[in-house]
Image (cartoon, rainbow, N blue to C red; front, side):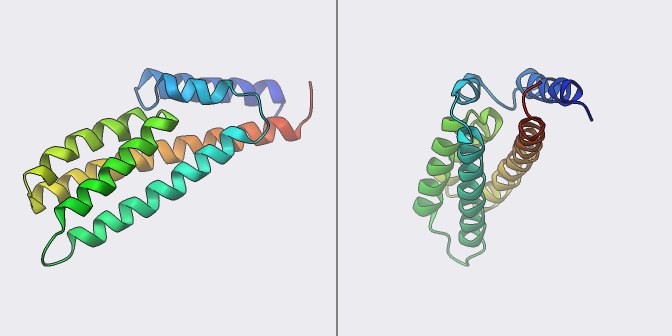
Length: 143
């Protein structure tokens, strides 16, 4: 595929991420940093950290007695991670999660976890596709 076609595909992906509210202006700021590999590194760190946090939250919610304060701390940490990369829908779903852990509702937390996971998986897939497209464009060299 020609670099121009890849750029068009990349631009369409990023435009759709903004249009659908998956990402916000914090993401745009990260994209504007012109240090090679910076965006990929930040995105990969976010994906790794968020995945670990979600797994730990799931583990906590599967315990007979749930430590809601620890769940809350982890969700707050995820909210911070998602906000720093501009993962808007993940960030918003963390805000909704707060109601469930503050109410100490295990059922509510499990439903909120499903929502956060779905939003995370969506943004993760799109960010990984974006990084792959950027790497393919870079590998083609200057056009």
